[in-house]
Amino acid sequence: MLKSKILLIIGFVLPEPKSSAAGSRMMQLIHLFKKNGYAITFATTAQNFEFSEDILSLGVLVRTIELNSSSFDEFVKELNPNIVLFDRFMVEEQFGWRVSESCPDAMKILDTEDLHCLRQARQLAVKENREFALDDLFADVAKREIASILRCDLSLMVSEFEMELLQNQFKISKDLLFYMPIFSKKLNDIPTFNERNDFVFIGNFLHEPNWDCVKYLSEIIWPLLNKRLPEVKMLIYGAYPSQKVLELNRPKQNFYINGRADNALEVIKNAKVVLAPIRFGAGIKGKLLEAMQCGTPSITSSIGAEAMAGNFDWNGFVKDNPSDFVDVAVQLYKDERLWKQCQENGFEIIEKRFKKEYFEKDFVIKINLISGNLKLHRNNNFIGSILQHHLLSSTKYMSKWIEEKNKKGSS
Image (cartoon, rainbow, N blue to C red):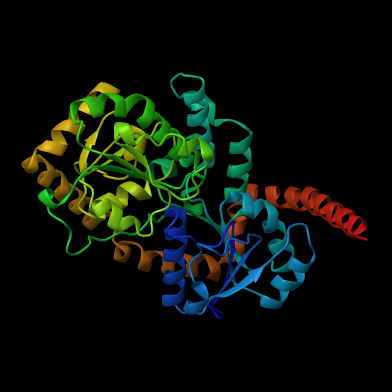
């Protein structure tokens, strides 16, 4: 067993589970570590308190930290965590070298959320109106992200597809990866087919794939679907809508931009069907997992459904062609028997693939094993040690230069 159980989480933002799947994911990790006896400190440079979860009430300490400041070095030395969890690779780039220098024996875990290089490569292909190719992956962001994965002792992955991609395309050792998706379970007391109305989409608009999806719904899917089901509404929810999102609100065409939902599950469980024609992205899609929880069938794209259903039937339909997408949307909205079968498919997926109990024990065993043999584990990842050495050498002095520059500026 580990001698100490002190976890430092360095977050991109404070967790907002009501705003994004990433926020829900972070809360699940916090609960998992708390259950296993860890004292947790959550450190972040962000100031997003308005919609963030009250993690203080869970006994989690919250610290505000600064970029390019040696005050972090003093803070982390005093805390002396035995595990540091980085929320996304950009955070590891900023603070990983400082952790390695101040607490060299701390195990470093990267929560990838999704593969940013995959999402951005797919986005580029959509922007250029062409098919995605594997060559698109090998861009600068991939070099940064893969380097971050190699520098860490373990990276948490929500997508089996992305784990295979890392191993096959980038030759990442499976010993550095651990599959742990967003956990899910079926809700109780969900409305029946006849108690539900309308189509719904929900997603944080700070996430570019969500904005693209709503724009695609507005311009391509809904004009066709609205002609077929003129009395039905398309309800769009999402935190942080920009002006360009709000301008898509068209009540006369039954297309409604509603902004932030106070309770995403309430919104989804009262809708008849979730529509998510996602054109680019990565990871697993929280909105589609929530649809399964709520017993709400969904229609999405191949990218939307990627790595979620395994060998089980989707809880609705997976269609990439707009005409096909609209046809099955009409069919699913009207056919109660089909709708109920799709609902059961979703329940089966979350029961067989997304229960916390399937992953928690193995995760604790994994981190205990690595922490107890950290030197050997790192010796087996020599490329990671090389990258760590060069990052510390380059980033360290750049950061110190910025720190000195900031001091002179303030004086």
